[in-house]
Length: 210
Image 1: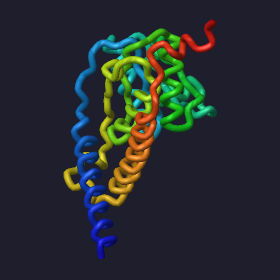
Image 2 (image 1 turned 180 degrees about the vertical axis):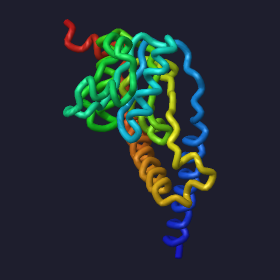
Image 3 (image 1 turned 90 degrees about the vertical axis):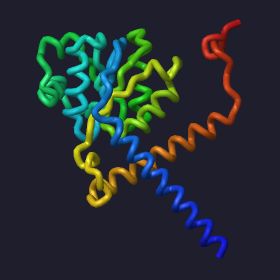
Image 4 (image 1 turned 30 degrees about the vertical axis):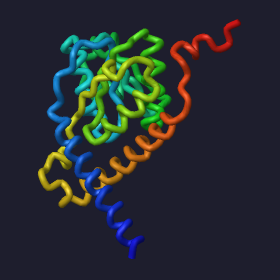
């Protein structure tokens, strides 16, 4: 009997967390206009055209110097991505970089970090879908050396999740539950890693020095 009660409590906690996660996703759009940054990164995935389009629109508004499109399919060409996003060629040719190495959100974070360091960018605007943003920001902050404030979220809305009773749609429910479960897994990983010893500032640079 106690095991059943404990299970029901866990289910209730999980459902409460899902409701809070869904509310967070829905409240993330319309996105607050970000402040001036060094670069913009668009993470590809579902509705990549909207994500890239939103990133380029911020670039056109002068909010950053360049855009990185992270996680581009290796079979896609630069022209394919330009056509998909509808970007003006002049702006696309001068200020849009494509990253082909990321196959998932972890890869997006690493690719973004490598690009930012190569460009000497510190402040970034992160563009991805609303449901993907919480997990993406966890992964990006895990590899980012600076304060969390350096990473600004700019979420792109997902139409099926904007409905007040989104759980009535099997597709929306599946998407929200899957993303919430992935988010919990990453949150758990970062919590466990945070319990271990941390290197002092500058340790990475000092390693290997006499």
